[in-house]
Image (cartoon, rainbow, N blue to C red):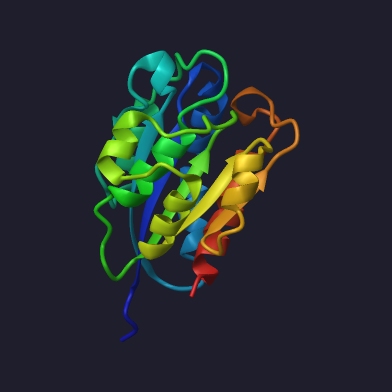
Length: 205
């Protein structure tokens, strides 16, 4: 009997005030994501949602940190619990959220470890003090090095930015930078992004 493939997934979502459309589309499209991922072989998955804003505007960057679940309904409820507000003007605490998602998640050791980021904003160029204190990160290269050491694969959907370009130099990080994505990625087919990402995760060795 073929052993099931174990996949751990963290959806890391910008929940500033402009992101309401994206959150709604993720909530509606999550069924398609898992249907696509299970077409070629049986997989044993669990997933969770992390929501973040802007440390300097909201005093803390991490606003939602849900536990892993293997229930599609429970995961959908996590998306439904996200509240898009705050954040002020760009940029947002994206690098801090990626550090938390990748480095503090309690991954299963024998699983494919996946982080999927959705944001319509540029990233703050520096880590918050709390991120530096907890993870010892001061430079972007240190975040990338730790992601690679953890064998985490990061899929990013965002506007274009040079920091996202730099992240994409890693073989573990796959940025999709979108020209004119609109507020909340309203000009983007989020269902298509989810379907394509699920297919890409299946192909990971």
